Amino acid sequence: MRAPRSVLITGASSGIGAALAVEYAAPGVRLALCGRDPDRIGAVAESCRAKGAAPAARVLDVTDEANVAAWIDEVDDAAPLDLVIANAGVAGSRFGAGEGDAAVRRLFAVNVDGVVNTVLPALARMRARRRGQIAIMSSLAAFRGFPGAPAYSASKAAVRAWGEALRGRHARDGVEISVICPGFVVSRMTADNPFPMPMLMSAERAAGIVRRGLTRNRGRIAFPWPMYALVRLVAALPDRMIDPIMRRLPEKE
Ligand SMILES: NC(=O)c1ccc[n+]([C@@H]2O[C@H](COP(=O)([O-])OP(=O)(O)OC[C@H]3O[C@@H](n4cnc5c(N)ncnc54)[C@H](OP(=O)(O)O)[C@@H]3O)[C@@H](O)[C@H]2O)c1
Image (cartoon, rainbow, N blue to C red):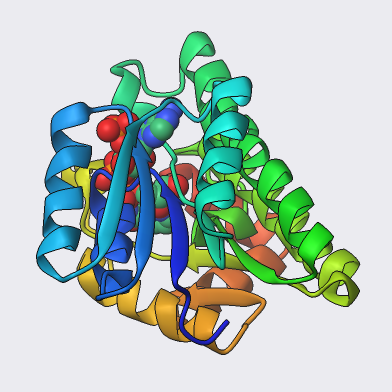
């Protein structure tokens, strides 16, 4: 997808999603943006408007299947979507209980069900017209279960595998599907991480990398590359070598 004119982004009210909204904002570009906080999503829409785009902010929880589908249909009816970015996500610490039982269920609901709720209605529309692009926000945490964030790693692994499989399945339908796997990015999600975050980058820089990857229709947009290489190595090592290291990794809380 070279220069999308109709773009929908979930979780656009802060961090990477907000930076992506601003990255795609330009005269003539329609942006459908969602988040749960009206002030935050409104402020991001204003920033996009200042760049000449036509943003429409929606207060929406991605776990609400019916409302997400209705929103996507409404936006797509008004201007057929060129690009949908299923970005909304949460990490355990957001719930104040790390990955306690309730937090684990909520995390899967947002990070997995929320992505499914976004992708399925968009995919149906794009397949019908044989055109469109979908990006799924995963993480470098998807390549290995990390003891500090078990449910988070698992949720990101699920959507990564799903997205990569959908890419092959729907290539002949004219729909481009990519999976985004960032390392550490400055956002509300990482703001209170009490441990060093190697190669931490700004959300703006991450958004630029994502956009370039999507423009080239890359299947997996994983960055920064040294961190990507490291997680691939960690995932490939035998348990007896990696378990002692994994047990010493810090937790989010
Ligand atoms: N930061 C990193 O280091 C990093 C690395 C790899 C992957 N990621 C992924 O990148 C994505 C964005 O995270 P971020 O780092 O930018 O964190 P963030 O600043 O906390 O942004 C998360 C976004 O998702 C929205 N959101 C959360 N739950 C939602 C729900 N139920 N319904 C609708 N929107 C919801 C939030 O908006 P409201 O709170 O207003 O609803 C916010 O806009 C996530 O999927 C995350 O897992 C982040």
